[in-house]
Length: 213
Image 1 (cartoon, rainbow, N blue to C red):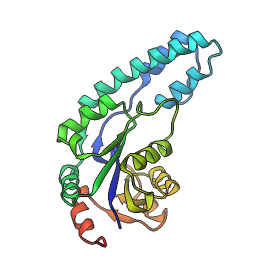
Image 2: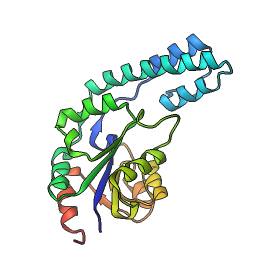
Image 3: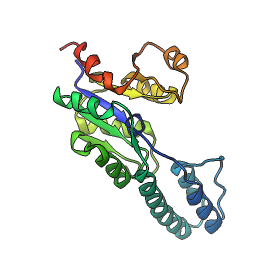
């Protein structure tokens, strides 16, 4: 029986992920090589971890964390709720389903984004980029959300907009629900394996009505 729905923040909102200014400042200040054309927080922190001087490494980590948090608060200002997200969340909450959220942004930025839809109070468990100590993956975040919800993965669905999210959901034991997206090839998403599929988050209520009680 399905008792919980888990959402990546990007399934509910559109928001930017430009960390170029942070990467540039960290790279020039600490002479670290940050790979990739558009590195994110994990690439920036991984480069810092390679510093051999412990005192310098700690200083760089603290400065990068502050710069990332500031950058993400700016990203949060321009976040836009995806069509159907608000009604979909409320439909799930009205059925007494638990709601979990994983976010690739800081907790402060995540809460600021969720406040745009009065959604903060709807989630029983949230894991953001800075919720867990040290370097962690989305697999770690999903595992932590399930632990906080007190449910096994077999009792939960995860809403996915990409092949990577579908793979991660299955790795943890969650059943993926594919969200159609212009950002990704629908046929490729469907070809990734048998999954439920929604054309819009507004279809959550219809999907829930078909689930076994």
